[in-house]
Image 1 (tube, rainbow, N blue to C red):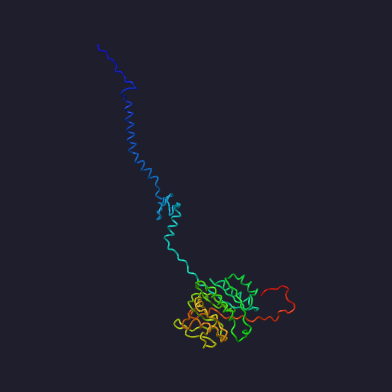
Image 2 (cartoon, one colour):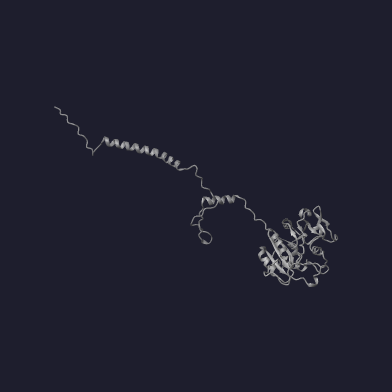
Length: 349
């Protein structure tokens, strides 16, 4: 008799187990799938992290210095931290052409002789209002006095103009109607200019004799500023005519349109010419003369020392435009000024 003995069931803790084998197989399959998918997952993450709208960092041409870079002499060179905004601005500035500094305007030196009279302050005020509108102008005001007057000193202090206040008296023997006027004052202005520039290289400049009884167009100062040696132009209301002017042909002065003494070497008014500062400094002996000079001849006597008619530079559209007028102020009538009952307030006029 054979008796069937049941097969002993394996213990769960020993030997081979189908359930354990199945778990191991599933785990291996999951690991292999994970490692297969891992590269694709990383690619997707990288692509999602990249923003196509974000601008790429700008490359600069400057070399990179680490914080520990050592310069000359063993000193540590500090690291300059840059930002994208500043780098972009610097790059734009480097791409633009460098602007050259504008050349300095030649200074116009206006020499104005003046003397005490009832209309003195009024005429100086009119002249100062014109000069304030002219760039790079230096006013040399020369009084016909032994000392500076309080009226002119206080006036210049409030004028707001670069100025030099000089004074020199005219000898009494020269104060006669038929003798030239303002000779000493104009020579004092010339002496100041030469003394100012004797120990330094002369800057570009133009000298102009601006009498205080004239009226000046602002365009005149633009014309004279380009003077190379001696420039000339017409003057209105002078010489018994509506105007006087140099006659110009082919850009050269060939004669004079004047109402008085056409035989003068330079038949021109004091307000009708300007001289380069370099010419003044190159001719230190050129001055206005007393001895041998006649009324109306001072311009010719002065210009003969520094130039010739052929060298004159016509301005104001070849001397066809009037930009300055010899408007002498009418003599003031003070007949009604009280002699005894004066005002209790002293007002400067």
